[in-house]
Length: 138
Image (cartoon, rainbow, N blue to C red; front, side):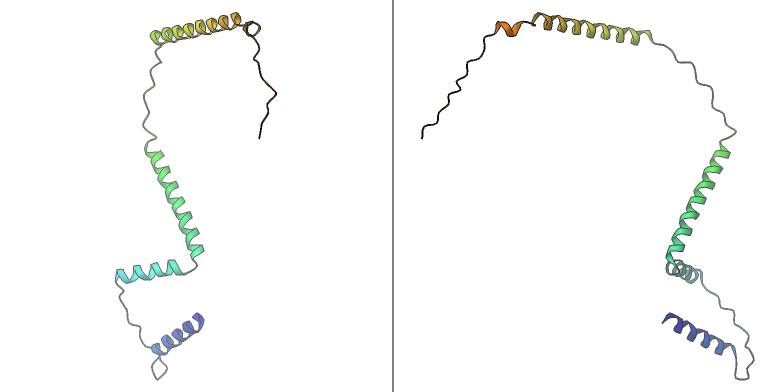
């Protein structure tokens, strides 16, 4: 259907370009406003093979981003950062961590001693008495 319309449009255009004698008429220069040109371009991009248009836009965006990163890296290439100062060791923090480690070790040792003292506690406890003869009277 679209092909028939295009053929008809081409025929009409070719007929307009020729006068009755068969000579071609001079073409008139038609000015298109920027708004109309933008609309035509948008329609062409959206309607003419949208897959190809999408892939083209994707690669175009990637290329533009790549160029932007290259330009940014070249611009900052001349600047050098000052060297970092050597790290300072803080003895207060190390002492505090040593104190906490010692206190934790001491607590673990106390807990282990308490468990060793409770090693024979099961022998001292009497066994529970359980009545296994359970009856249900209806």
